Image (cartoon, rainbow, N blue to C red; front, side):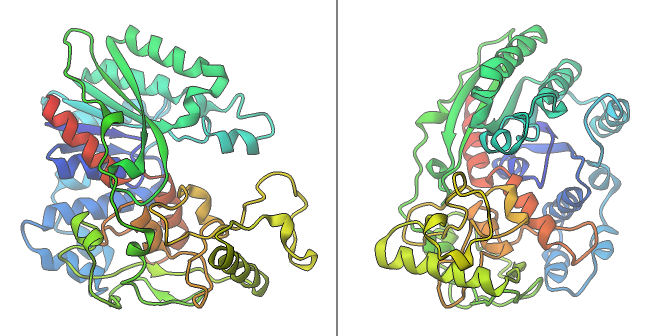
Length: 413
């Protein structure tokens, strides 16, 4: 069965569906760096059954990005559409999709519009609560794609704040619009750690279906594949780094793998570590980081910003976001939610090893999101990708969660 991925981001949702046996037709994404990531991942899936060494050579830094892409067929290259969904570009997008479909029917549309407009944090940080933001209405565009391609099903993922945004008005309007286009829907509230992801990440997943048949919908809220493992399992085989250290490609693991990494396909057969790169930090931030980790180790408590010595406080806001410095505790079953703000600073994601005294690396963030180690996050320019990678990872759907949802849907179909 095939699918179209709208608002595809770095491809976390698509990765799970591809792994479950669905075939991607196109990915539509406005961010240029994310489109390079999608193209690189498409290259992985293409070459893995033909010649794994080509992709391995790229992860080892032996060949450049253009060398990886040059032998990809046009069908793969043209499947990544770097355009913004909306009135300005929809016709161009539709032409590209029709070329890729070659008269096939579309079985599934997946994707979720950018979540800032519905996010509780996004609304809190916005001066007007995101009122008037055009992203509030991207579901209208989604509905137009449903009307045009008439898939059997759709999967719409978004933040939990969608249920309360505009006092629930957006969700009510969305349901009415989808019904007008011929689709009924059911909303599930899911937690990523119930799908084997070592992260606390609550989301909504809407499954919609054409109103001319009654599907045997899986109960996504009943899925309980929560792993017995701890967050330390994503850290303990990686090389130790200080702030500002790390290599983008062809790194070596520090120790052998562990059961979690093997069972959940995180550390896989290519055995090449990439993007284990830590951002640099100021002396003051590193002083705070040590206090954060020591407070957790000694007391099992999170640091309250107001408890810092006056000399270490630089933020005037002392009432909200008082947990702005936070350890990724490795003795828990899940971390705090990884969000796109990680691309701006790492204060909310401090590494648990006080000796390393840094925020988590790109690869550590990717593992917390359940991306496999062979998943490479691109920038617009090759090898200038740390910030772009963090942003893509924070915005992504965990592939493990996506995979379990896709498997359940496949059984239903």
